Image 1: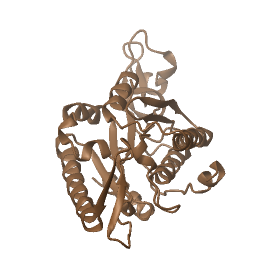
Image 2: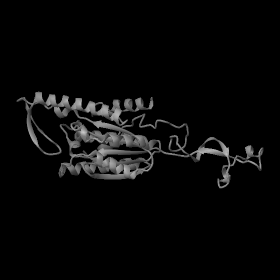
Image 3: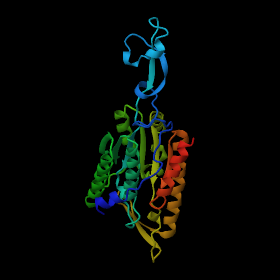
Image 4: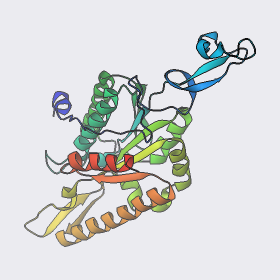
Length: 305
């Protein structure tokens, strides 16, 4: 698939990722700030003190108390909600059983939809790609060209991985540590991952660290899933499966493949519960078939709280 075809897959998600406190301002960065500064929206008046700008003085109001007191206009500081999209670029995201069913293409779809939605409201968007190391990092910038460049970088990375497999596993902690060391302002953080490294090993998750991240940033996890991974049909009743991150192959029965699938789903549901109630992070499972409908529902449910 050419990169132009990937761009053509980008769809407009109407509701996007919204801040929990939307602003009524028509100016850029359509989110309320927690700070007062030199913005456009007037929030009140306060007594002027020496050293503060004279341009903020409300002269009409101050004429009544001049020269004993001067009053100044308080304005809301302009603020954009920066978005950082964290993408799992480990080998497991390349699993593909058909042209229509592919977690890598699902990731590109979500990246384009979310990134373009954020750029449409003039919010900067950035990218962090990881495996067991940091693969890509792009600082948040405004504009749709930034989103297309991000998609192009991931597309090229995945194409290279197909031709020359490195079989690198995923380590989300590497990405979290990198992010915390660089993000000084509050961000909207979106993690795109299949959680292969964590579903069967909940003890490897530092929920305390994730709780710290959730307190500083508005973080969600979009879990990439492909139901066709364990629905491969075989005339003999047996299929050969391969661990995408280790290369180890195993022959199992179709019935056992179904049992493995159910066990993974149960473990993933438990992990989602822990993310929500232990770390305060919302998550949703998305597939190539349902993400167009399920993602907006998930995002709307968060803004309705």
